[in-house]
Figure 1 (cartoon, rainbow, N blue to C red):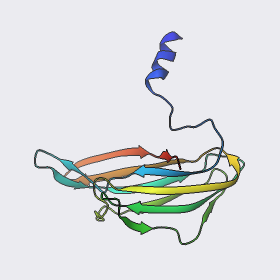
Figure 2 (cartoon, rainbow, N blue to C red; figure 1 turned 60 degrees about the horizontal axis):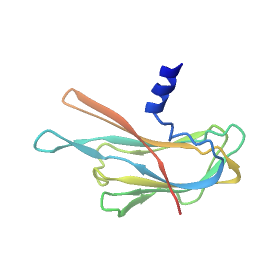
Figure 3 (cartoon, rainbow, N blue to C red; figure 1 turned 45 degrees about the vertical axis):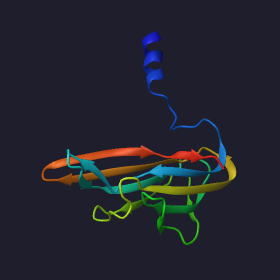
Figure 4 (cartoon, helix red, strand yellow; figure 1 turned 180 degrees about the vertical axis):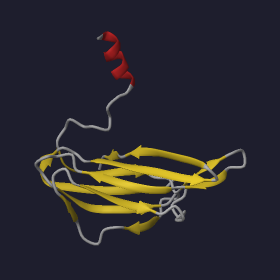
Amino acid sequence: MRWFLLFLGLFPMTAWSAELSPGQLLYVPVYSHIYIGDRERPFNLAATLSVRNTDPRHGLRLTTVDYYNTEGAPIRHYLSAPVTLGPLASIRYVIQERDTAGGSGANFLVRWESDVPMSPPVVESIMIGAQSGQGISFTSQAREIVE
């Protein structure tokens, strides 16, 4: 049992919050490309922003889903009006592999809110790409911005 607890200590569960929340502003790293090799050749990636309502009883409203480039300049505002996610519902936003406007330091700002304190959503980005028989995929998790 002691080894199991030590093992769990190596992987902190920062992605899951036990605290209920009425809303958050989240920063989500995303990469439209990464660099490979000694010559730092760009390797383009498709990126998916995934928002998953983890609460089985309450819905949430997305009020902001904005995409920014490496310099912090806004590229795209995905919402013209709030979007409601029901209990346990999910939504995704995709950056095409050929869209390199974000750069290697791109990010999303995601704001969600609820009428009642609820289990916070899981918000993450998933990047995937393939070139010349070589493939890569990885994820990034959201971090709350304290306002």
